[in-house]
Length: 386
Picture 1 (cartoon, rainbow, N blue to C red):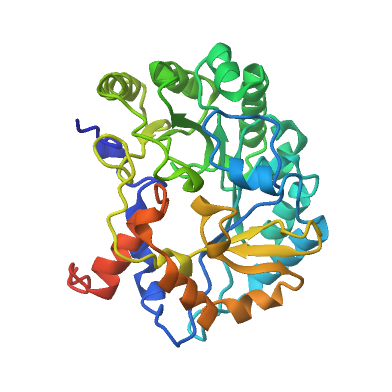
Picture 2: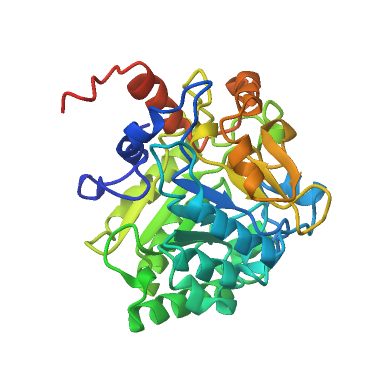
C-alpha cells in the first residue's frame, strides 16, 4: 500500500520534515567536546494532567507517575526569558526561535499558559500549541497570537469522540475551535496570517476505531475554517514497546486509503489534508531507520519536576519518551541557567551513547536523525552542489 502524504501542490507544508535541511549549518556544529548550538525549537510541558482519557494515550506513563505536577507560572516566565537569550555556541547568538507548548497532559489546564504565550511573543519567540481543545475558550486572545494551534480532535462525530476519549465534549471542542478561528480572522492576529503553516489544525490520530471517519472529520475541519487536517497513525508508547502487536490490519489500511483519497477531494488553496506516514513502515508500524539519535542535540523538553515543587523543572531530551529517566538531562532543576551548562556537556553525550534506538517507539524525529546521519555527517547528498 502506498498513500501519498500530501498532494504535489501541497509539498511545501509545515509537516514536511525536510525543512530540517534549512538548519544544516546549525547542526553541523554538533560535535563531541565542542559547544553545541541551542535548539531552534523547544517543547514546554506546563502540567502533567488531562481532562480526557484517550484509549491510546502516549502520556499515560508520565501522567500516572507524576499526576498533577506542574511548572509554576513564575517558572514559565523565567523559561521564556532564558530561551530568548540562550546562546549555545559563539556562532549562534540568537536565542531559541520557537516553542511548542504541549505536554504529558493538557497544557491549557495550566492557569499561566496565557501569560507564558504573551511573554514568548514579547521576546520575539513564535509559539505553537497542541491541545485537546476543551479549554481553548479560556485563552482565545493569547492563542490567537500563536503561529499555529493544533487541536487533537481524533474523531468526526460526538459518538466516536466519547467512545475513544471517555467524555462527551466533541461539540464543545468544535465550538471552541470555531471561536478561535473567527476571533483570529476578525482581529487579523498572528494566527490568522496567510500561509499553510499558520492557523488552526484539526489533528487526527489514526486508530482502528476512527478510520471510518477520516473523510467526515476532514469535511468538518474545512467547514469550520481550519487551515490543515493533520493525520498521523497511532504509535506504541515507549513504555509498551515490545508488548503490543501491530496495530492496523490489512482491512484497516485499505479503508484508510479510501478515506484519504476521498478527503483529498476537499483540498483547495486554503485547506490541505496531510497524512504523516513517513515515520512508519508500509503497515504503519514503527520504523526507526537510523543508527544513532542526534535529535537529542536539536531540541529538548522543559517538564514539571519529579519532586512536585512547581518552582523546579526537569529537562528532558525526547518528547516521545516523557517520563523515561534515561532521557532526562537534568532533574528537579532550580535555575534555568543550569540548562546552558548541561547542554552539550559530558552528561549529554553519555545519554547519547546509552540510547538504543531499537527500543524506541515511533520517533517524531526520525527524519532529523536520518538527515543528520546521511546529509550532515556523511554528506551522501553532496549538499553544497545545489
